Each structure stands twice: as C-alpha cells, then as structure tokens.
Length: 236
Image (cartoon, helix red, strand yellow):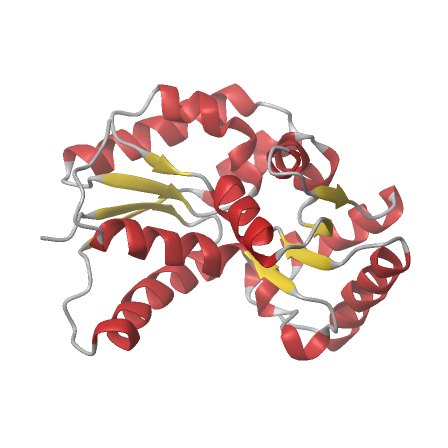
C-alpha cells in the first residue's frame, strides 16, 4: 500500500499543477499502470502568503502552514510537501509543529547536486530565497557552494516570478534576463544552476542554458513519489 501524499499547494497554482503531474505521470512511466499514490492538496490563499513574505511576518506564515499540513494529516496524508522554495525559510519551525514527516526541498536538492558531483552552483529564486541563508546553508552541509546574483538582478528576477510566472505569463524578454544572469554566474564559477523557485522551470529549461539545471520542483516531486512507494513504515 502506498503512503498518501499531502501537498500544501497554491503557492503558486502553476507549481502545484507541476507537482501533481510529475507524481502521477512519473509513476505511470516507472510502473506502467495507474496505481499512483493518493494525493491530498490543500490550496491556500496565495495573496496572504505574499503579504506575509513582504512584511517579514514569517512566524505567522509558519503557523498557517502548520495548521494546513495538520489538516492534511487528519484527512489521511502520511507525509507532506510544502510546494514552494521560499516558504522553506521556516521549514524547521513548521516541521516541529506538524504531526507527520515533511520532505524538504532544500535537502532533496542538495543530495541531487552532491550525486552529480557539482561543487559550485548558481542559486536563482525569489529575492527571499537568494537573500536569506537557509538554502545556501542547506547546500553547504553537503559541501556545495552557492553563488547568488547581484542585488539588482535579484530584484529583477523576483519581480518576474511574482508579476509574471506566478500568473502563468511567459515572456521571451524575461527568459533573456534569466539567461544573462545565468551567464554572469557561470563567469563567476558556477558549474550548475539551481532553479530555486518552483515557477522558474516554466521559463528556463535545459535548452535555454548550457549548464546543468537542478529543477527543485521535479526533484522534490520525484522524492515524494519515491517515498510514497517505498515499502517502509512512515516515521514521525
């Protein structure tokens, strides 16, 4: 029997859809049938979280996420995912308040980079993911150094994420902005690029970049599928 997956979604809708599609279609590709794990999705009020982020009210966001994840657990979820990179700023606080195990997108990505033998990456994401230390420190624990764009570029990328990608808008000029930033990170020594926002893969794919890409959405969803189908008891 597969473990039941609980996804804290809506952060944004585009990434939530990507998680659902990857888990279900990934199972079919791997097993050839339609016996994928059951998935529960709690889609939150995204605007509320955007406001909390910009007002530096992370504790309130953590409390709300914990409440939503515990609701998923009461509904039958065996483990949970926070389907966004930015809100992993308070991952440890949320995990401590939730009655089921959560899979960290940061830890999952760090392990993938380590397996690839890459030691220095460029980190792209919202301004919070690039500016705060949580993701860089998570990578450092596996010996990976993370480079972030200059402050002005961080703001440009973050604006594209919130004003375009989270609204489902894909613009060629914005792709070129990301490509210019990636080129600068490569000149600084990056051997790969972490797409550290679950919406960035809507804009940047392997054909758009000549460095290895670490798509946090795909890596996180794949780990959830693996965990759900492992024949081991649920911890926590």
